[in-house]
Length: 372
Image 1 (cartoon, rainbow, N blue to C red):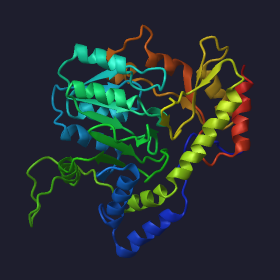
Image 2: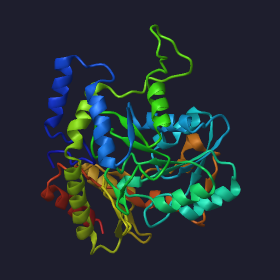
Image 3: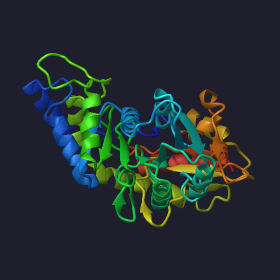
Image 4: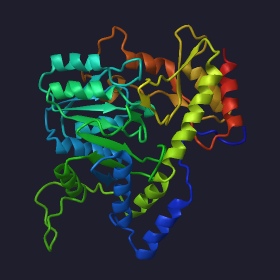
């Protein structure tokens, strides 16, 4: 094929230029400004929360969430095992100790039973970070209830699930603090950026101060505590304002991509789509498959075959408990065969770009099906 069929790339709608142009016309180029304020308000309205702080990345948002909850040297933090490293790296920023929790099969997200087992092993836990993998909500009600019983705050990493809902409630709303990402490959983008979602005004005030180098309200530059350069720029926020206007359309387009894959592979005995629980609406950020154990070809063979035809795909996230940097960290699972490890060995993410045509997607399906 002459063009690359992408995994997931930014898709502009044209409205972004209006807000960028306004920033140039008014010389609001530096961090902060009207676009940041308006983007935060638009996000809060869409999600149904009281406060949003727009930041330079989702990683920065997780870091400041941990700081806001008082996580420090030696504290235990539970974290979803199957995720991108940005979810757990901030735990190490604060010299805390990550303990990774296995996945469950119904959503590929954190297993509530494994979480209960982890609390039995570690009664003193400072925070729990749960991830909504590939846009599918975790069992957030159950996980939040477990955390409440153990008096432990929950951070919901909704970096991949903006617009997804569980029982009608937007993701990022189930924990004490929610996290969003607007990286270039997400369902909407600000080029690079993220946000922290919270109903606690005191936390938001603190996060905004920390993200702006903890500058005291003085005539001169004065700093009474450690701060960070984590605020979103007014230019990036302008992109986000324009992107947010087509979020629902992007979810519809991503859902159609998932539906077409599911239909195409429904007659294949070796493939299963990533599962979507009945009580949630996923944004289908990425459509994924797993291969059954008796599949005659491997994940890598399929990836290499697709790559020859300029079709982008990749393995599922490599679990953090298998990463060289996190070797030696504890991993808790109720399963004899760790679910997260098993999914990694059998799963891959398919091209899910909304600019992919139906004919191009059909070509992806034919090429995969032809391997069996």
